[in-house]
Structures are given as structure tokens and as C-alpha cells.
Picture 1 (cartoon, rainbow, N blue to C red):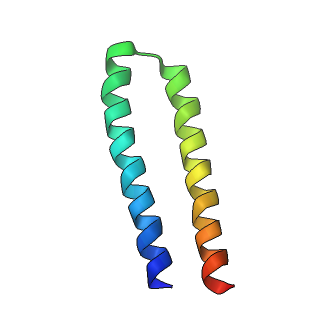
Picture 2 (cartoon, rainbow, N blue to C red):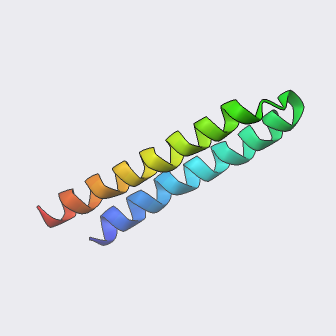
Amino acid sequence: MEFYARKAGHVLSIRLICLLFFLNYTKLKSSNRYFCSWLLKTIVGFGDELNQYFIAGQG
């Protein structure tokens, strides 16, 4: 179980780093609508990955 929690945490930190880079990029490009849809997809995608880790941990 600890392995899956660490793995999920690692995925989250990668996403956060990408998000920070993307935030800086969008300040220059100022494409807010695209950013919002990307952020939503990222959050939903992270939730799906987290569910898969927990299902695998229980299986």
C-alpha cells in the first residue's frame, strides 16, 4: 500500500511541476480557455490514475 501511495505522490509532483511551467507559459500566451480545459483534464486524469493505484493495491 505504501508503494502505491508513494507512486501516486510521485505522479502528483510531476503534474505540479508541469503545472507551474504551464502557468508561466500561459502568462506569456494568455490563452485562459485552453489552460482551464487542460487543468480540468489533468485533475480528472490524476483522479483516474489514483483510482487505478488503489484498485491494484487491493487486488
